[in-house]
Length: 126
Image 1 (cartoon, rainbow, N blue to C red):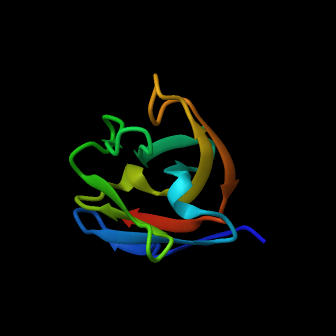
Image 2: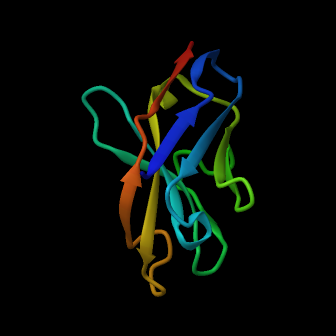
């Protein structure tokens, strides 16, 4: 059975940090691209970080660039999202997702995500 379990969310003041973890099982972790997404109430799902299996690079959108960084540990089948300098607008449910297919031409942009977790709530107070 495939499982992705996010943890590490919580309430933090603006300017603070949180480290989210994604613990996975049931698939060959090293063969999958891991992406982090978030969704706030009334807003669309937003990609916030990804480590490409194609070129090993990390991709982050402008809204979190320089503040969020992701890492993965193939030996432990886990991925982490380090979030620094948090802002109230970062408040959302954060999800990790795993995708087996990633386009070599569009790393981290064109990924077919197959599995995802239940999410962890991150709340940033002003």
